[in-house]
Each structure stands twice: as structure tokens, then as C-alpha cells.
Length: 262
Image (cartoon, rainbow, N blue to C red):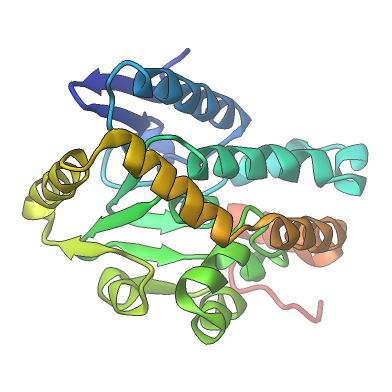
């Protein structure tokens, strides 16, 4: 495994770190593959005594989301059939959600788009003050398609999910906590203490009971139908001129764009 994702075992903790700080930890296909491998390793570590996974980002930002540059490399065949790409990213989020270990996502700076969708697949989300969260996909002419609508609605309800998804706006950590999107928010200097406190509480419970309880709760709020609908809608939107223009505008920093094409 290269250095796009780092992982290490520290006693009862298995830590996974997104490691592209120079690119604000933007997630590309290579990082996706390495994240999947890291969670495979976490599963093996569960059988060796690991009790908790910490998912975090190197540097000042958790992740700005998907790497937009890769969209420019997609050929016409991929644009006409987005389902395999969506399926791979959905599979990664499902892998995070179905981990035998409880997964704590540690957020700071920005957590946007695909990064927030991965955070939603985690069991707990703890953030530093002044962190910003958002699903800006509609500003690119697409929608969240890796559970960003499905998991979000079940977590915070229809009205707030529509607010976040339809506007594509960022919200502050304090608002995200009030909405139920985050479990806790701490001053940056106290973030690690807050994470350690949650880890201690989880470790105090019996490991198999925690793992089975997580599985039962996840199965009660099963997501497959919602994920299929997300993938269908995204496949339609990905072929539109709106999306192509939005990507070009975002990468060239020429926002806002004129959606009417005038």
C-alpha cells in the first residue's frame, strides 16, 4: 500500500488516515482502493483485539471530497455508464458502515461531498470547532450518490436533508451538532481528548456485543433501495451539459456559473 492512506494499530485502536494533505485529501480512485484495503485490515485486526477504528485526515482538512480532476479523464463510455463507478464508491461506504468495529470519524477543517458521505457511513462523527460540512453536489449539476441522501435523511430527517442537499451550502460544526449530524464538537485543542473519551466508553463494553448491536441497528435502517435510486439519478445527471460546465467552472475557479447558458 502506498502513502495515500496510512494505517496503524495502537493497542485497541486501529487508525486510518487520508494522506493527501497537499490536495486537501481529495479522494481519487487510488485512495478509494487503499481505503478499502485499510478497512479490510481493520477487519482482520478486530479478530486480533482491536476495538475501535479512527478515520481521520492528515493536515488541516479532513477531506474536500472527490478529486474533480478525475472527471476530466472519463471517456464517453464512462459518462454513458456511470453505474460501475458509483457502485465502487458505494461499496466503500458500505464497507465502512458494515465494519465489525465501531468507526469514529474525526473531522477538522472541511468535510465535503464524498468525504461527508464516508463520514455518514461511520458510527460516530466528532469535529473540531470551525469545521465546515456540506454536500455541494447540486452546485455541480449532480447529486450525492454514495449515501449522501439516503443516510442523511435517516440521520437528520427530510427537511434538514433537503436544506443541505438542495442548496449545496456548507454548515458550521455547531449547526451540524444541533441537527444531529455530529455526535460532539470540541475546541481544536480538546479534540483528541474528546475522541479518547468516546474510545474509552466503547472499549468499556463487551466487543462482540458492540459489534452485534451495531449490525442489528444498521439492519433496522437498511439502505439498499435508497442507494439504487441515488445511482440511477446520478447516471442521468452525469451526462448533462450542466455537469460538464460546472466541473470546468469549478476547476478554473470561475464560479458562479450561469445555469441558463446565457
